[in-house]
Image 1 (cartoon, rainbow, N blue to C red):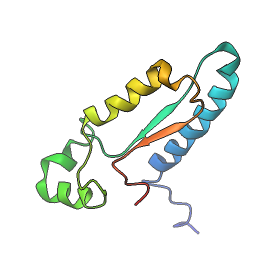
Image 2: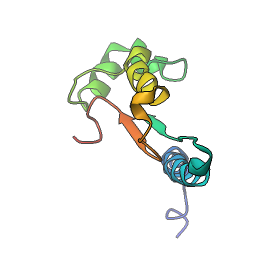
Image 3: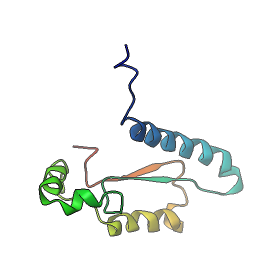
Length: 107
């Protein structure tokens, strides 16, 4: 039973689920005020937090092999999604979580 209750290392996934749910709830609550709420769910993107995945060539190759694009993401890969959601082009996109992960989720 103790192993079953050990959630160490699982909190990241739980928090991603919470962000998806929070996005939907906030979108529904704020729609009447003409406020769109959406989220972006990125794959592994180069940041200070993920630099070790990029710095070690073997680790980078191992991680990238899980992605159909065969590479990990760069901050610029998120920019297009952010610009879309911030523009009038997405005025009817509401309560959605846009996955930008090089195809990892669909793999």
